[in-house]
Image (cartoon, rainbow, N blue to C red):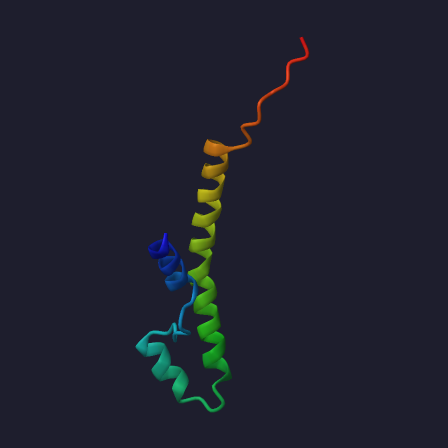
Length: 77
């Protein structure tokens, strides 16, 4: 049980990383201010998150179909 908790914490508590390739970084570092560089980083992280969200939704839907509401039905006969 402790290993599962540590594993979940490992994936949920992440260190902020720069999501940028070397070519994009070189092109954007020459600009003053860095506003465009931050926008590029945010866009890359946003695009990276979409597949994980879709897989999570698909997994939840499959879970609900397999282990859905299995309440005993009441027959009034």
